[in-house]
Image 1 (cartoon, rainbow, N blue to C red):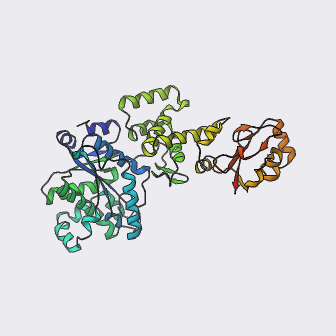
Image 2 (spheres, helix red, strand yellow):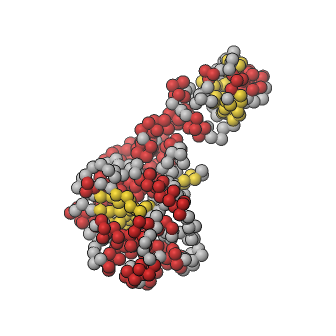
Image 3 (cartoon, rainbow, N blue to C red):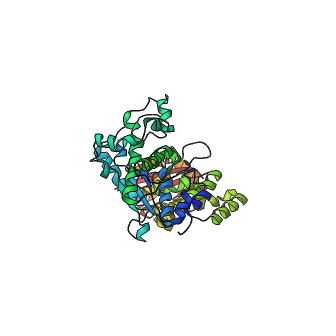
Length: 433
């Protein structure tokens, strides 16, 4: 083994519950382990990044990771951690979501190269559930798990005892379906380990119990703590919604900002969970950060590691440049040249803007006329002249003086000009062809 999988997770604070003998078993043999992903959306957000990283650790430790996409269980809805019934998905939406989830996971796990014994697999439980009739399932699977056993699960007890609107039979069967997934993978792939968040312990142990009772086999379970934020707010959520792993849903700039603006306490925890930096490096960064928290060395390294892993080095560099632009007093044409239209709109989100005809600057226009009559940035020609006299007027973060002619040379990101008065008053001019 490349390293001890359980020991690696333990120092990172990523072990919540673990079945006895799991660590010893994994040290003796190459283990096939799986994690399930529910296709509730056509992508995955950073709440699922922990599970993806666990599969990456599994593969790096020389074991065989299996990513299960719940095409069948996704039709039912997992009641774990929920207080209300989830809306059921149509087949068309489900298929779209499954494709999206598969696409995301494929960016992180090696399904083709490397050693055959640790080469990852991706499976869809719909493939083995679609032809399984209700009577056959009840006879072959249902008889092995008692209702008493299922009712004792925490996720069931909370709902049945009055939290929310109760639980439908559809959701009640979820743990049995998930348990059968584990049995199927045990019998077909020799899968001995299922991993999930701490809220999945009940579902996972139903699988190990089913394997024990029906297959007379031994299987194991490991869960990780649910990631939280120090202030009590939900991890992975911002005012604008989820932080997704797809750039078209959450821009790289917004993704980077989520990590770089994390609190000291969160960054100290997340550097262990969301990166592959070793223990010595993580502790060194934490110690360095504590000496001078204002420099935010911990947050910067966390943001770099996660953004590069998810989006690549080039996208990370662009996000860093975008952040510098926001706080820089002066920005070079070369820096502007690295920015695209969408990124700049996000940097200056909420800034007042106006759209003008591009022909108005074709032959050049005096700065006074541009800032007042053409764009309405400032209220009068006198106000523009006063700003020029105070040396407080900038175009694209660079100071301008009286007599400046605004032209195509001042256009950034194909069709934008950024006006600024003082340190904080911005105005975005968009050019329409």
